Length: 69
Image (tube, rainbow, N blue to C red):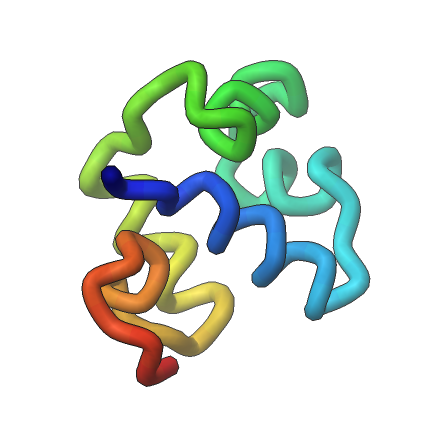
């Protein structure tokens, strides 16, 4: 099972950011971003790519396909 939402939260917390700060970066409201972190919504490809660039990691890492950042 793909638990990318756990990685999203871990990355955000490791960077000492709030959901609001990440949502602002993505130009969306915090509740929308929260749904991605909770696994209630699938993350769109464009958002996934932006987050990978933001955190300077790979989309594969976020998706849990690798443990190599």
